[in-house]
Length: 281
Image 1 (cartoon, rainbow, N blue to C red):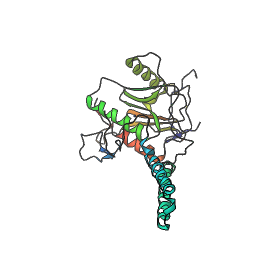
Image 2: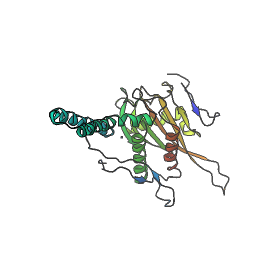
Image 3: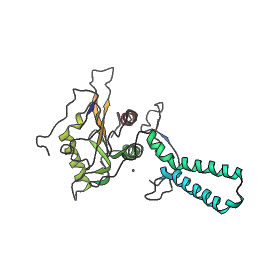
Image 4: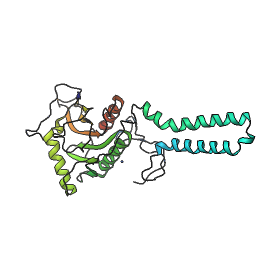
């Protein structure tokens, strides 16, 4: 197990006993989680994309199917009119087949350029339950912000689980280990106990496990979790007073692949977390 810390002095509490509204057809949206500061720099969340709305169909592979389709048509056309084929037609067919092959390979090339390999892709855990639960004693505005933040973090990273905690109020989305037969209120209480036991509420620096975390300590994570990243939400002290910096919460993400979060990913997640600084409940 490998652990990356921004601050080597950080300590976690260790237990004494081991043990993704309706789909909108758009490509991107520039959104802000904090509308109270109109001059604040906008963050491109890129949360909406073109979709057919077909369950189980990944639109990122659409170029591959287009390539298969047009390539098949070119081959059929060649054999159907092979007797009268000219040299110009043969050159056009060769160019078309080359473009079709490139279209087929395009999804794989895109994933390769992002640093992922076909053998190391995000997979859904066999254990755990897919949930979307948040505390109810918060404003509608914060509920909306939490819902969108967890959604974009799941869609734009390799995460299978996202948890955001703001001053003790929680929002969980994705796959989690939860007590069997527990109600939403009981699940929230159980997560509160897990967070207190691990000591996440006092975290002051980013915490990154790129090759897996202790399953006995992180009971809430589903089996098969290999990467874990926790980014604290810290309110900077007021320069006009003697206040210390205050930990307001954290953003936790888990993935089923190793080294799931690059430096760029962690910087983007940090920007999302910073949007919750000073948020009123």
